[in-house]
Image 1 (tube, rainbow, N blue to C red):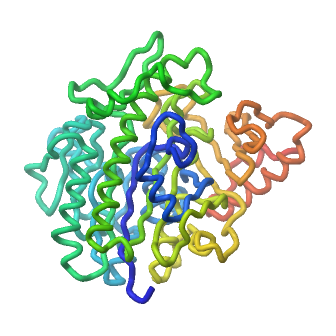
Image 2 (cartoon, rainbow, N blue to C red):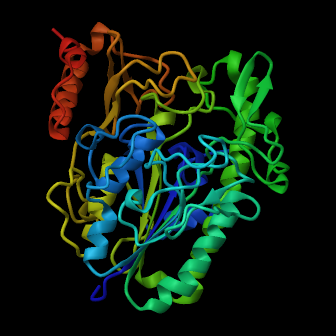
Length: 461
């Protein structure tokens, strides 16, 4: 490709790898994301660097692990001095723009920390993006405000359901500002869906028997398409959580269906405008969702539902169509992969690895295992045990993690895809554990983090 391609990142929140129909979900059809995967490369073993919003997003924007940037917990901020993907693309002549959720500024606003009002992101904390229509977070799908330009007040308010309105905002921006400008563009559409949040009536949770799960709201016409009694649950949802999981998954699927329809609007516009053939599209999530599996909801654990994320890349004429890649991938790889596919040099401080050669089918996997980190979280404790630290890796076959309470996980995902048989303490698998532990230590070393004492102590004898 002689002309630099445009870049469109479609960045979603709390969408697990397993919940697309192209990845095997039985409950919701995602024809537009399936279309994107059929026309590009689908990574089946991509992981969240740290499965909660803020550190995962820091990894995406910087290409660095949380221990390098210091973005470890919810509420941390991306330092204004930290180079980002936007700085690299702006230096190469791209017009960079951002629409949607940011969650990297830890910003307050005139209302304080009120749901639906966290709209202000100071220009110094916008990661170097030139054009900005973003908000710190909302978690309210019918009351989303955002900031743009230099003025804090008054905020701008989206009209209608957030995912629809943010897609409108992106399409309007691309049509009126990015494409007519002539320069290559790098645009991020960051959607909160299918993350939980408040609905039109300010309801943020649902009681099902003795269990409360977070509300996942979608427009009524989407919610009407999914019924709890019809949900096919993953076999690792315990009997005690099945009723709540069916309720939660019906809502989750309605959000995903709406998300998929909006992705379809974007893909249709790319084709109709003639931009499709010269645009790199990357679709990915910051982390997954447990959905009742192993008796948990939301994220933060090294189980597959929380850890594994969708990652789809499409660039006509450069990347093959319909290719599936099982090589381990990581959120830190998005920045260098995007730069590589656009012919830009990757800055020296970036820790992620380019997936471009393996995506194109003419290179070896850049890594044998993908590292995920969890530092404990004093700011987020809606479930028991989230203060426990862990470090883990995903390989094409195994998931391995070590906890700072002396426990751990070792799952053979090929033989046990539902992760029901933890082999960590099984003496018959001590050799596999020893090899995976060495690999975990090696990946931690590559991240630049000194080996945590609890990881060292967990080394098999």
